[in-house]
Length: 169
Image 1 (cartoon, rainbow, N blue to C red):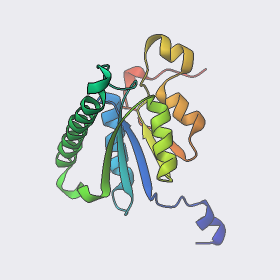
Image 2: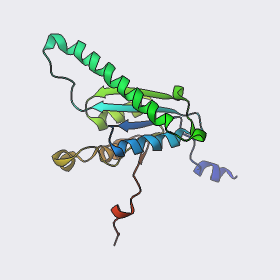
Image 3: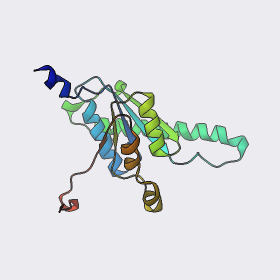
């Protein structure tokens, strides 16, 4: 292989970030991220974001309630990821120690971009949708925002569906 060929060959990712909102699209993104780290030593960072600033409670209860909410949300995320790992075919196992999970509050696109920056991600994986209705019209989907602002490569995981394909003229 020549030097020019090596420079064109993409390097294996070291850090992959995937956004998860428990939708079918984000589940597909998770499996795509699994595929991206299978066969190399990359770390996968799975982030679930609760949109907004957290539970609205009286100020004296907010910090404790927020901490408990985050603990429960993190446990739910860990179970979800573990179930998807167990569902992989036997030849496609991934060491759970290579997967980091996190839960946060805020704007999903902003939080994903911040995590990707913090871990110096090589790849950010998202589903094609994330926001709906007026939010999507005004600011675009999470995938749109991530694609426009990410410092790294972005992979939008789509489900292949022949009936959803549109012809291009």
